[in-house]
Length: 399
Image: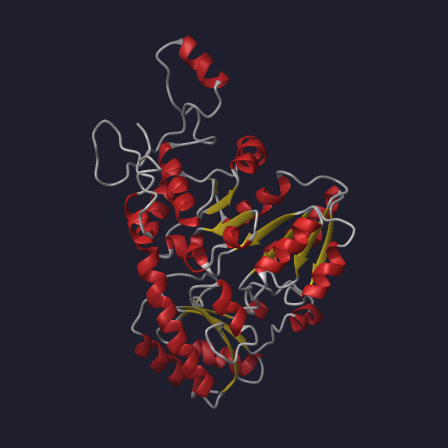
């Protein structure tokens, strides 16, 4: 079995890559990607077994290390991202932690934007310091803070852009230049933009991480994650870490993610169009105090969004009501959009970050991030946008 020659697919456009690339057909020449539900592999002779373990990576030996279905997912995502190499993980947070843990050591320093998902903040503030790794948080929008923080040297920098949940943007090219000048590696969580709307590697990032649970699956079926970067980083640092610590993606989930990649372009394109229409509606609504969406001219970083993103994303953030009680009344009145902590799904999902994804932050830290008790994160799905607008309108009428 062999993957489609990457040179053969070099001229393909994204939708063709997402449909055909990374195919690893068996002797049966199946149309749909095969699902290899196996933990191990057999050998015809003891000599073949010995050779397999000597030539690490040249043959499948154990599905914790590699599996044909997972290989197909990694290759397809690699080609979409434009990376040299990719490794899949069991979840997005496994990808984030592995991307750091595989190369950081005691005495190292990480500088990160403070506008991060709660679990990412936990890794930086509570886990890495236990191993003697310093973590410094800055306002990711302020380049002067980045300059001061990396002065004197840095091992790695990290950000989300757009951020969860406030949709703050980071000037990726500028931070990449600052990081490299200070001798560091720039890591970005690109999940809100998805691999379609933003190409961090082309802007200077070294490592890109994803929760494939979000837009890549996009249908609420599967957990998964991925780390992408240079062959040197993936093969020499990340792969041994994953091999020996075991945050392996299951072959079944990899198969689901493969099928998700086939339609991600169609889904995200439609979701972005719907998100813009919803953001424009909310911006005009008298019961909405504020709206954040990079596609709106009112977003303070609208120009930066147009510069480094090909689309403004599938998530809209707004304040519904004056306090938690009014916001909960609005949330409970929604009939079509459902309350959940996930995003990037084909179904519209609504989240109250202050009491869910960021509930462990101190009130003053939430305030610094703009996460008020009235803040709502709305992940726009594939429903008719007018139906979603009508649902939001009737729920807002309860405030």
